[in-house]
Image 1 (cartoon, one colour):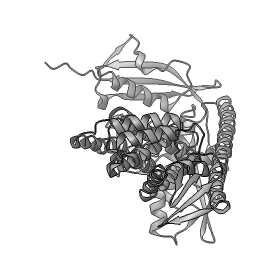
Image 2 (cartoon, rainbow, N blue to C red):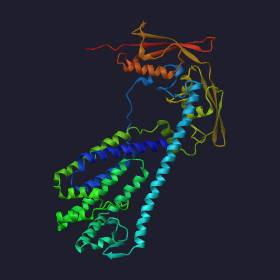
Image 3 (tube, rainbow, N blue to C red):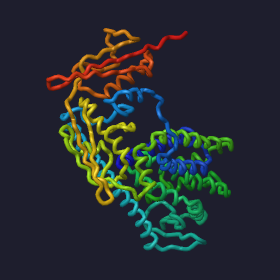
Image 4 (cartoon, rainbow, N blue to C red):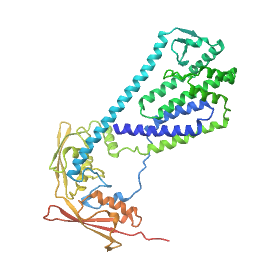
Length: 492
């Protein structure tokens, strides 16, 4: 679950980054303000949704090396490089330590995230509480469907839904100027700009660590002001007079976090936008770029979400017949190389899972192509002749499993022989990457097959590795490995 959330946050941030980059480069200087507002809000929504979209298409590789080992009894049923979990006891210990450190780091990051989330949520609640106090503790007058609240604090005029907040010092303005301020804030209310701000604030709480949130919030608030300024000017107030009023009301005093006031830096940009020539109607076509961007991002992130076939099959089995037998107690015997936790992890099934004999055999021996079967643990760590057997005892609607492992003796690679077009070569083939004295590993052999196929020199369907085990009285038995290769002829 933690990994899924991390991936979601990362993908969502990438989506938002791309949307905002396009906005900054192509759209931010237009004057189609309502369209710009819609673009930003849709960008946020798409950034939240797209990482969750799953396209039901399999994007599988066409590499054919997966089936090259099916002819060998000691590699029964496995179709790719298998499970890697500690090539030796020392590696297994190091992996356990690494896993503990990683788990500790994840817990620390989660703790930091929760603290940041609570802090942002607290500030958000405090801002809402401050607005509520302003409404309750200050005199207010009803004007149509709006409430005009008279504040003692020296803050810029602002609105929150149908409440308009104006400090009493602004009563010194002329009646016409005061009405313009009220008209300005009424447009904010009519356009539901407070709803936009609350939505962005809520998203900012969840993604408090994302620096893009500050730019997004600033941009949406500026667009709100541009929309209102444009509508006020359209009512015949005059660009020059309105710009002079903005300058007169400009203040560096910071207003409420959930509103946009008449701050000095913003006033300059607003006056520029008022005087700027309106963008042509044809420029609205630029907003269509949202469509290809959405398609690009959807395909960029959705293709990696192919469900794990084993998990999907397990869920399917559970849905088909809920009344069938379940797996009961699982007991391991004969294991000395791997502990029970490692074996249970590789087995993938646990107490309460649906009992399916073929699936159990697949998880243990890879009989149906499981890529991380228990047998791969041993075959990747030199135990060429390990055997795994299962005893099943039905007990009150469950089947107890007693899994016995005969680990056998560990093998090392001895001679690696290469035969090309039926002729043994003395020249080394570096792509094989297997050396005398290496612990036998099925995964290494499959990796060598893939490397040989990738060179383009040899027919991948005719790469034929043959092991020749040699039983000795030494600590390790050894196995000679023969690679039969067929060169691809150059056809002109």
